[in-house]
Image 1 (cartoon, rainbow, N blue to C red):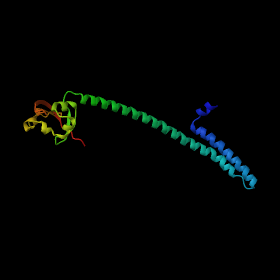
Image 2 (image 1 turned 60 degrees about the vertical axis):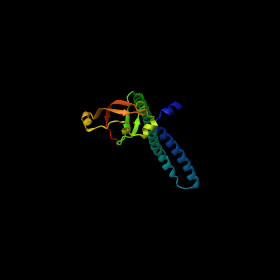
Image 3 (image 1 turned 90 degrees about the horizontal axis):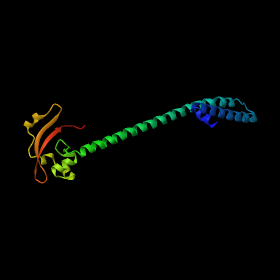
Image 4 (image 1 turned 120 degrees about the vertical axis):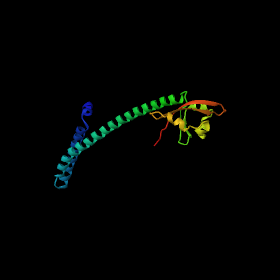
Amino acid sequence: MKEKIQRLNAVTQNLILGTVTGVIVGYNLKIFFQHAGKPDLIWLLFLLLGPFIGYFSGRERQRVEKLKKEKMTLEESLSAVENALNKSKKKYRLLVERASDAIFLTSAEGRFILFNEATSLLSGYSKEELKKINLSDLQLEETSEKNHKTWLDNGIYRYETKWKNKDGNIVYLEVNAKWIQFA
């Protein structure tokens, strides 16, 4: 018997429950009004309202169950997207942080914003020190107008320059720079 009830949908279950409740309440009201000597047609109203209320409450229950399933599906999808994003972030960090080339991001004024370990090793400055200095503090030569002809069609600026590292040694660099403006 329990298996059959579970197989009924929410509307049918609530319709049955509403009908039974309407009959019980209606019958009790009929008995009450008969003893009171008053008209007993009010029981008919409950007899009719029970199935009506049961039907609509069952529809609402069905809607809530559907919304719960949709929520679970969305949460699973969001979890999968978050996992993929985390994997991608880990791969990106591994690639950038472990690269043998210096990779760095500076502000328009030349302040180091983000950089990898190779940038620290090449410059001789610790991460904390690099955050406090400017790119121009490392460069021995200014990028001149003659170098601007080396802009490529894809927006990458390639040139050679020299840095003076923390120990005073000169480091020759081949630079591939790209201007990126963050919104």
